Length: 633
Image 1 (cartoon, helix red, strand yellow):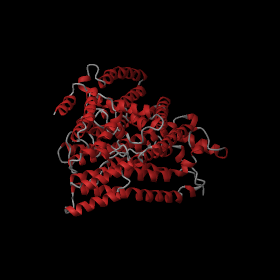
Image 2 (image 1 turned 60 degrees about the vertical axis):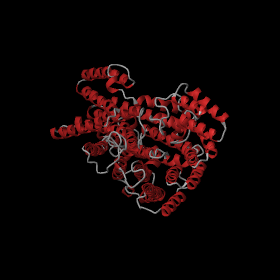
Image 3 (image 1 turned 180 degrees about the vertical axis):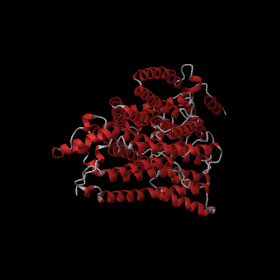
Image 4 (image 1 turned 90 degrees about the horizontal axis):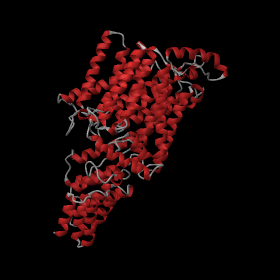
């Protein structure tokens, strides 16, 4: 039996199902028993589903050169280059744990990105214009589930009972911005199905769903999703009018361009709509973007390290920020985040992949006609809306997974429109048979890779792919389950849910420290717990291990400094405070404490030098005044 081959129709549907269920469950997954109840379970689900998708897609991947169009091959090659660049940048990252699994409460590490890249590559092979209907319906259903959850949160009947200090519409994504971003995508899919539908009942149902989706989107208080939706909706309606009457389409395109101008200007606080649409958080983002560019300038090839933005931000932040002393662990722009942390070796293939899929989708939209043009336009609208929103967004896994899935679906559906590609044969021996099937494929929108081979039914199901899938899943479970168990244990110890005695509590902290020797993120949490319990010596020990794993860890320096100062040992705290000045050169709070430590040991010369540094950085500021007062006192 031949392993390298086209997938049967049944096999292709299975892969589609795993991709779509993987996307939906990734978005919806939460596990409240974990210390990170949102992103860690999403990464777990995403990686497991991607492993199954990869295994089941292997026959088509290994024979991709012979069975798919040139557009799909180019797309796959670019996705592969991105994965390769990601792996190289991961190897160059100083803290491998963060590079692989991602930053604390983000999990945008190499493992997550590789999983999403797999979904794109496999999606490009197994989807087609006809099966894109499944993609849209999964997207819509996921969005409506989030919408329903949003209504529960609006009514104060959230079954999870999150503790939220600001806007309550975090749904399963953890932040109103992420809720807004996904609901904007979902709203485009709902609108497309409504416009395509001919039945009054279906149109009414979609209309109700769309209104509910947009209501929760607006209640989120974030405009990210709104702008994404407007982009996608504009494309759908322009194409719909164009199909109906070319002149109407041209007029709508002209009006859309005029209408978009003041909206775009409002985003940057210019024009009459600025007071209604401008969000001050954009000013904060400008600070993050400056830091990202500074990181890239110093580390252009490999970046500062995959998902290492947070530990480098303080050093590369600009001197005068919108909110002095603000910190972040993400550039708040997907593109700048990848540029800063992954360098050109990751950024270039990423941009080329996005650019190529955008070009292929736009080309297919122009070349197609009728209902096919509208379907391509809708998927392209979802894609382009997300591409635009990603300029100011974080790659939250629950939202990002659909961006990558959409890329694969758009590439597959668009490639089937290109007659030059779809009229190529696999090989000379199957030329006539292949061409007849492709003619049918072009008419029905079916994918090349999912054509069933009636002459060799034994290849319809290949047991080795199931075996490989099982091996991958077991291997990943062995890696991921201990991480989940440790997260549960840390949550329990932070809340002392087992009501342990003092001695038992310390013993449990020590046990968890031993279990997390290679995880600097968990060790930071445990060091903080130990410090709060008055276990100073234990906190020193944990902080030492943190610095061994991550020499530039802010908290690896900060926690022992605080501990030594709390035990009246300023001389011991000084070396950590001095290191913090290197890592966080604009942090006046740290400098003021350093002045106190210098004065406590009688080193007024260094205290004066630190006060001078504050004055040079922020003359006349409250920190400058406080530093001068310390010297006088």
